[in-house]
Length: 306
Image (tube, rainbow, N blue to C red; front, side, top):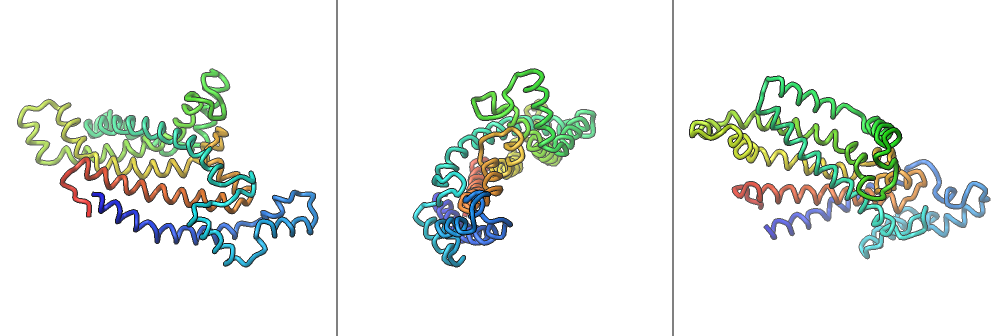
């Protein structure tokens, strides 16, 4: 397995190089002049030109690209145009908040999604199945910004159970995690239900029932275990999505994570920070896919990684 992991990690290098190159040039196509934003609205043309020179934006784009790649190879993500601090420091302070939020969201959404999916799949074409899938479709269809505002109005403004914004403790994670997790749990429930329905038709399930095993044992020990491959795949991809796609939720709750940091960076045309954030998002997906592949072999030893 170690050999497989090393092989996959080495295979990441060309992908990341392509991402770095595309992001670098596409970011500079965003309308707006970062030198003007840094200098301020009252700055003269000479002041803006001086800022542009100080930031190195007056150099040919290929020279800027070379310096950027050279810095990355040294582990330097650059300096934020907005905060004037190292980009790594800005992202590091925000990343832990997003990681906590994402971990809580995926934890409860996987548990609820599996329970709902198994419940629906085990009662195929019955009222439990229809109710479960109705809830799933509703969860997928609800816009996250609408859910977020609704939760704020009910639990923060009226009931005052949870804070409205910020990241001050566990309570501040509850409402954003629910907002993020609703659609994820619905997706997992649908995939779990589909997998359970398919596996319950297999011959080994009939054999287990013929041996006199209780239906709960058949479903939870045999059917669910054989469904874990699909569930792990979906959960892994959704985890990667949550880490990089929490922009709307973090903005609604004014949550200091990397999603809201990306919005601020785009608004300020902060090239170094935008490039670094998108690079991190890409790296996350690649690593999560690797972890999912490794979990395949853990869940089913018959799967050989090569």
